[in-house]
Image 1 (cartoon, one colour):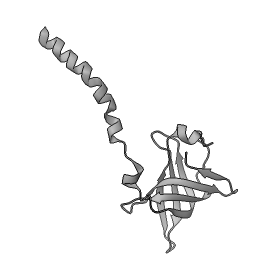
Image 2 (cartoon, one colour; image 1 turned 135 degrees about the vertical axis):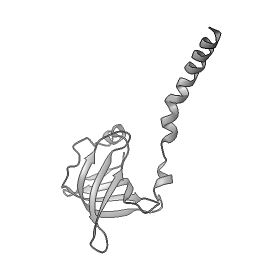
Image 3 (tube, one colour; image 1 turned 90 degrees about the vertical axis):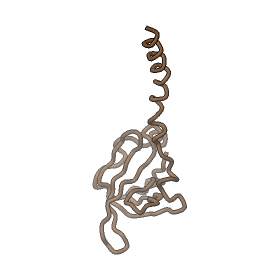
Image 4 (tube, helix red, strand yellow; image 1 turned 180 degrees about the horizontal axis):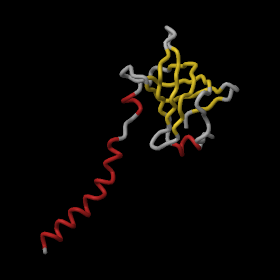
Length: 127
């Protein structure tokens, strides 16, 4: 009986630790993105995902040789973006934008969102 009570006590004390493990997996932007560089491209939105933990913008942009490169740009969480006026319909596939982001440190086609300008001139900032 004492062994069961001890095991239950240990399990109950471990629950808060297990609940916080996902927080340890979260990354900081500086570890993935080159914060010293900003890349600005004219692009076409391919997808806009309003999901946790980060909003994602998929886009196609031509590189300096004219080849189309697909990018995934990570923004802040939906609540933070909403505080800046964003919502799940802020961008639509096919929309043409000018977007600025910090590129990946490893050269991949991913980036950290900074700002974008829509075709009508409206500027939208990171949350």
